[in-house]
Image (cartoon, rainbow, N blue to C red; front, side):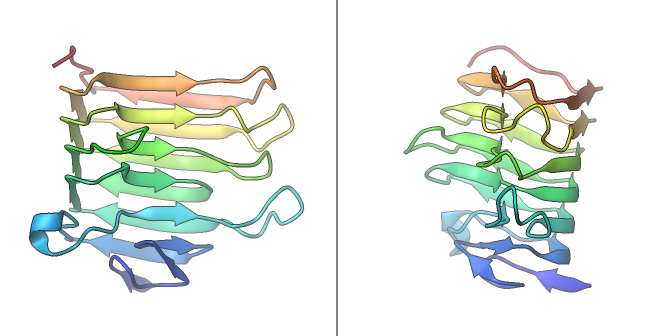
Length: 183
C-alpha cells in the first residue's frame, strides 16, 4: 500500500494520481490556508483501448478540500474508491466549481464501486456533487456510485447527474444523505 499526499504518490499530477493502485490519502488539509492548494485528482490517462489505465483501490480519508478554484476533487477513472470522513467546501472560481466531480472523459474510462461515506459538501459555488456521464456509452463499464451518511447542502446546486443519449448503464445510490436547499 502507498501512503499518498497531495503532489506525491504514483505518477503525481496536479495533486493527484494516474493509474494508482492501492493509494491512501489520509488526514490532509488541502486548503490554501494550510499551505496547500492542489486538489485530490484521480485520473487514468487511458481510453477505450487502454482498459488497464485506471486507478484502483483508492482511499481518501479525513481530507479537507476547502477554498479550491475549480473542484474540491475530480474523479476521472477509478475502480474501488472510498471517500470517508472528508469535507469538500467553498470551491469557487472556474466552472464547474464543484465539491466533487465524477467526470469520465472517454467511453473506456470507468467509475466502479465509488463510495462516499460520512462526508460533507457545502458552500460550493457550483454543484456539491456533480456526476457527469455524457462521455460514457451503452457498452461502457457500468457505473456504480454510492453516497451514504453524508450531507450535501448550501451549494448553488446540491446534486447534479448529467446523462447522455449514449445510454450508459449502472447505479447511483444515495442513502441517509440529506440534500439541502439552496443557500
